[in-house]
Image 1 (cartoon, rainbow, N blue to C red):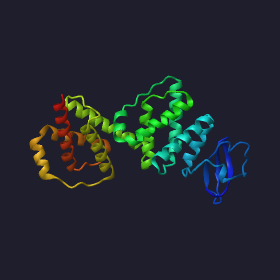
Image 2 (cartoon, rainbow, N blue to C red; image 1 turned 135 degrees about the vertical axis):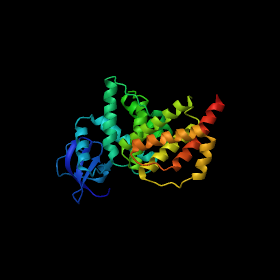
Image 3 (cartoon, one colour; image 1 turned 90 degrees about the vertical axis):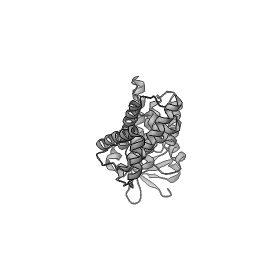
Image 4 (cartoon, rainbow, N blue to C red; image 1 turned 45 degrees about the vertical axis):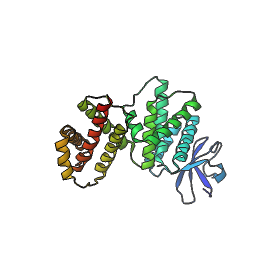
Length: 284
């Protein structure tokens, strides 16, 4: 930013809504930037720590409403956390993270104060699917805990990791959660079918979970895979239990995603299932 802005509305001492020379709104953050400011007053670049755009009017209003009900210290802390996330990934984040993460962390702190512990059923899958996001989420939660002298539960790391992944990929958190829930369901089906308790750190387990993630993404985007008819016939003959289970998983995917799943997916799923079942049986 190298041009001055004009104050449109002061949200708190550290956050103001400003307009640029083209009349576009910006959310401007800086320590004490809003203190004593009035509408129309100028803001100079050196006063600004962070600046972002919320182009969606509903998101603008949601963020403004949030700031009215949140302690300024927490707002500043969450913005520092977002800067940390952006720095760790060395790329721009979808600006929706300002609304989503502020809302989520604020609610998480309230739940902690009220001694409400909400379990995260997808923690293992999230850590497996998005390892870097999970690591950065751990750092974010540690920053919050140390700054506020609190201890947010481990499950919050998983939730924050999903928000980070959403901001990086421009996918909605709702869709990401839906896919995580589907993977959780599929993995439970696999465990029940094999009647085994899997080592969630094993390479074959990790490969299968990641394969399911990519399969779900392919189906969601409508990607077409080349059919593997000859290989399918071999696998059906050699590994009938894994092949039949693969088709059960595919039917669940189809029903959940409401989209057709290419037959070729059964081939790759069967190979992953066979490898996983063999590994765990050999390890017992």
